[in-house]
Length: 166
Image (tube, rainbow, N blue to C red; front, side):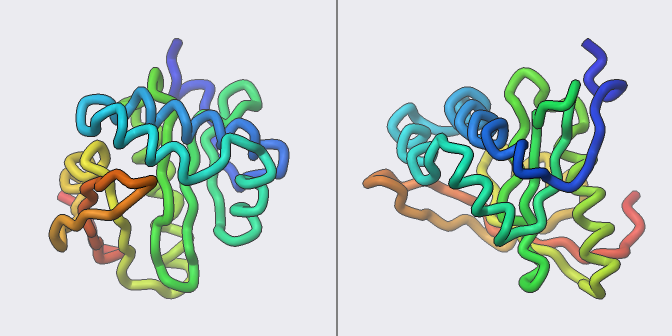
């Protein structure tokens, strides 16, 4: 499958919520397997219900962009526009490393610039941090968060917006 040829990027719709729940669950449980233990991934995945209603509610809180393939959400990104912060970025594991997350970030950065933001932040998983550094993000240090009795490392990162990347 040539993922990029059939991927459409758009604002999330209520009908995307169930797919978002599945993308999140599988991205955590499969996509993060190299960097996190089973117990850590189970704790992480349990933070948000695997139900459309939870993700629909999040669409009301955050500007949510989706990557859709054949009408189904295969990746998404949530932006807290008031804090200039990427809340989440997840892509279906079998479609990872094909530029979907990068394209979602480009759209998010553009939206933030249009709102007057000069910097964006994210608390990135170890899975995401390396790719973000290649895109001009700067690590502000690692921190550990507790989820369901498990400690998970994440990297606080920041990027200046409107800067030409080399």
